[in-house]
Amino acid sequence: MTRTEILDELKKVISPYTTNKEQLANIDEQTDLIKDLKINSANLVDIIIDAEAKYDIEIDYDSADKMVNVGTCIDVISEKINQKA
Amino acid sequence: MISAGNDIVSLAAIDVTRTNQHKFYSKILSDSEIPLYNEFSLAQIPFENFVWLLWSIKESVYKFLQRGNPNLLFTPVKFVITNLHLPADYSVPAFNQLAIENARFKGIRAIKSTITFADNTLFARSVFFNEFIHTVANSVNDFENILWGVKKIDTDDSNIQSVEVRSFLLERVKNIYGDGFRVEKNESGCPVLFGTGKDFPIPVSLSHHGRFVGYSLYKQTLII
Image (tube, rainbow over all chains, first blue to last red; front, side, top):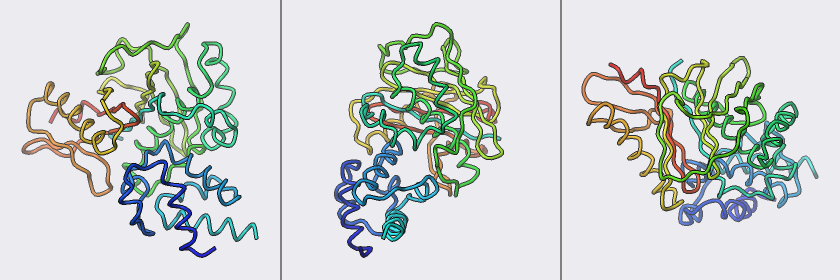
């Protein structure tokens, strides 16, 4: 998958956890999940588990803690997809 | 170290089914923490609430440490709770009020905990009502100078939560120390309290989840 394809899917994963839909539609790799999208930190585990299910990957602790903005989320998902291939 | 760290969990906002799934709680709890549930089970506290209590403790400690280390990342399983003390004959009280404010946890049956993270040992106090769990962390096992509060608000809109928690804190500060204080973010993005004149930024911690907002601060730093 390309980074753009992962980004498009990632929007769907994040969507249930943000009320800031306008910002979500315009996210880029620098968008911070908590500061920009106002996602409550209590939902970060939900996003990791939903991403695991969507891409059929497993995200370990050390990778999960890097997922603070959209770019690092794509980095981790892309890395795990490539490891699976 | 003078810092502040608090966290709140609205129990109406948690996903009970998901929390009880191993794939979920294993991202929050380490294996050594699972046996800590025994005491809570005897007190009829559901496992999902135990998981979110530990989340609340870990996040408050993370926020406390992150102020001094802005690049610190939050990996819940790396914050290990080594001691968790539930008061004897504990039953979870109903929260039949709009707000609670307290100093030192005076008159509160708080849950006491000890947490390790890398070379750090920290301490926390949690209040556990039927509607929420609120935790305050400190680097020493002394909460004499800690002020904290929790308020129920009308909405879970994140923009309004942010406004509500600031006005709740500033009202408390005004009642104790007078007018002229304001909340700003420091260069690391952590909230600080500024007064008028010669004082310096005072660390405060703000939290919100669902329809609850909370704060904590270290009182002694206000005596300038």
